Structure formats: structure tokens, C-alpha cells
Image (cartoon, rainbow, N blue to C red; front, side, top):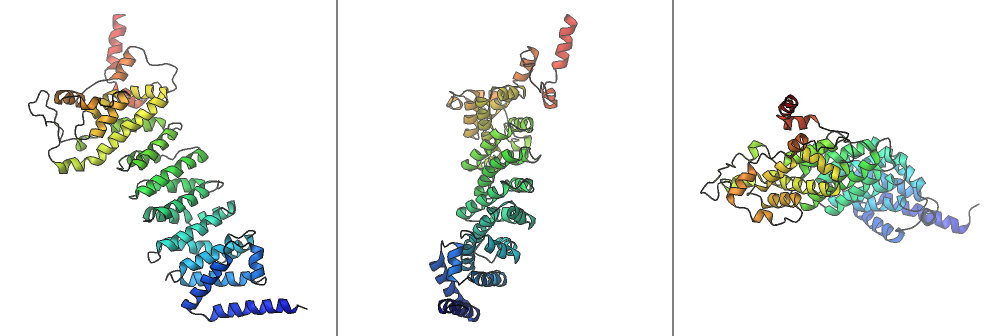
Length: 422
């Protein structure tokens, strides 16, 4: 037989639940305000005491209302915060299971793709997904099995709030840790974010990829092109993160492809520089300039990429002698000198000169138009000279790749001549 005190508590609970059931949108909004104010930070046992061991009865009502109204966005932020009080309370595993059993995780993911829902509301959904993911491996798998990675990645790319995007990064980082079954799915999702038009999304994806790469241990074939394309960004923080990732990737099987790609970026393809007409000893001091500001602007992405590639090559060469030797075989000196001849982009000249000589920061400011023309059309082939003089280290695992042989067209004939003389 229950005591008078217990009966009174049960009566208050029933009255509260009845008030919720009979309330309209405005009244329910006030009920949620009071609940959030009075119960923030409480443990599961404190919530049960508050609701006379019937807290789950209110949670199921919150979850039901969420599923019925999330498309309209009615008091959505308050509902999500109220649910969060249950899910974040100490010893809340029971509440978490009850929420997930009625499709709570799927509902949260669906809110991320709704155009009618406000950014602040979606941020609350992300926070709840973080709580779910941090609860253990099986919960991370549940999110991934609900096509969560795709929904979360798309939201990161479209979000206009940097604060919200940072919350999404925390979630993706959580999903890639301790989730062996789906960590590759998260890894690929991060790579798909690199072409995003959002600089913040690119920056955060690059940061998280560094962590993911160390966990997975193998690279995806598309990562090289995606990372090199990011170097076109005019945002220095994005370029920085891309170079940091490149520093990590050279330790994997894509090292050769990365080095070849970086060297190639120093000399943009013919369509990018078709307006550059070398005229040695020309009396026109602007002979190497693009014909109009509009054309110069059209080539800006390639020039930004050229400058960033020169910087990345310098970082790699200064940090690892073997990488520097490898790039010498790829005729990096020739390509850097060509980049120094790009008078339409001073940063390309500066980064190329810094890479060629760390103390030559102002070298590109001292060259005249004739020297610029010579640089832009130079045919320096350091790799060939090293090969012919036998200075290439024979203990390297990759002596010459197919790309090297293409860049040494006359080395075979030279060796034949030498053999003949012997």
C-alpha cells in the first residue's frame, strides 16, 4: 500500500502529463521552458525522483511530438534540448534505448536535410547525435546504418554557420574512432567534402582526414586528386590544412603520385598559359603579361594552385631529404624556375624562389624581363644530369618510375654512345 506522500507524487505526475496532453503549441512551449530551466544537468535518478519514477512517460511524449512536428519546426529546438536532458543525464542508458527504439536517431538525421528547419535546430540534432555516437560502438554503427554519414557530410557542406560546422566535425571524428565496421565509410565521406564550395567545410574535412588516415592506414585512390585540387583555394587556412595532410600522405603508397602531381602543378597546362608569349630580348616590358585583367582573373585558380604547390614542395623538401631527391628526378628545378617566370602571379614567383633557395625571399623582385622569359622557357633537366653522372642513389627502392623515363628521352642514346666508345 502506497503512502500518502507517494500518492501525492503520482497525482502530480498524472496531472503534469494530462496538462501536456491537453496543451496546444503555445502551452507546450511554456511547459518545455520550465522543464529545461528546472532539470538541466540532473542525473537519471534525480529525473526519476522528479517524475515519481515516471520520467520515461514524459520522454515518450517528447519523442512522439518530435516525430509528428519536426517537419514544421514547431518549438523544435526546445523539444531537442528537453530530450537532450534525458540522454545526457548520468546513467541514462535506459532513456537512450527508449529513444532509439522509436526511431529517434533516424528522425534526427532527417532533420539535417530539411530545408524548412532552422540552422539552430539542426545544431541541436547534431549535439544529440554526438551523445548517441559517444555511447558506444553499436550506436555509431546504428547511425552509419541509417545512412548517417551521407546526411551528416551533406549538412556540413551546406551549413552556413561555422559554429555548427565545428559541431559536425566533432561528430564525424567520433564516428571514425572505435568504429571499425564503418570507418572506411566515414573516410570516403570526408574525401567527398573536399570539393565543397564551403571553405570551412574543406578545412574541417582536411583536419578530420588526418586523424582518419592514421586510423585506417591505407589510402583511397581518389584522395590525391582531391587534395591537390584543394590547393586552388584562395583561403590560406584551407591551403595550410591541405599541405599538412600532404605531409602525412607522403608516408603512404600515394607518395609517388603526390610528388608527380605537385611538380606538374608548377607548370599549368597549355590552355592555362596560352596567353603567355615568350619573346626573348623583346623591347616590350609587358611581353609576358596576360592581355587583360579578365584573362588574368580566369587563370587565378591555377596560379593559386601553382603557388601552393611550390610552397608544399618546399615544406616536403626541407623536412625529408629523400623526398627532395625524388623530386629532383621529376625535374622539379625546371618546374620551379618556370613558376618563377610567372609575372602574372607574384606569390608563385615568391614561393618558387623560396623553395629553390630558402634565403632568396626577394629573388623574384630582382629579375628583369629577359630573365623572366628565360625562366619561363627553361629546359633545365637536373634529373637527366644526375642520371648521366651516376649520382642517383642506387639503394633507393624506386630508381626510376615510368614518368621519369618519359622525362629522360635521350638518356638511352647517350648511354649507347658511351658504351660504344668503351
